[in-house]
Length: 177
Figure (cartoon, rainbow, N blue to C red):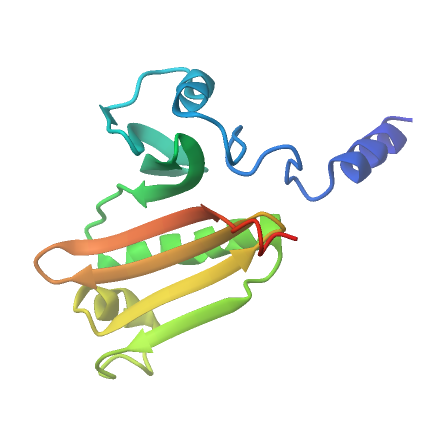
């Protein structure tokens, strides 16, 4: 009986994506005040068009979250991962783990792009993190839902480190029809 109930539950909830939400517990078009209420704590920084929250999480990854508003309606968000690893390859491993999380949630990416500026490590996947840190490689993946475009990006600079950002953007009303 328990297995039947669990099976029914998973059928009704689908692959984990909540159809009523576009991002976290939020919907595109919410006002800044509605987002602040849903986040349950005050933002670190507020402007006319953005809310910035520190010390948030994207699954097991610490992140800052920046919400963007157009005419006081939620139109996008960025997760800026804040982990600073000692080894560059650890950032690459995190990126791979996030690809799996997003693929489990949204299906395979519609695009997966590796851009090589210098091919020194191209045949050495165990050094791709180093390649990113040295600005030899950047990577991005894209997923789409009916209402949202999700982009995962990784790039780096030797003196600044490696940056991994997940962006969620509301599709234009023309695109989501």
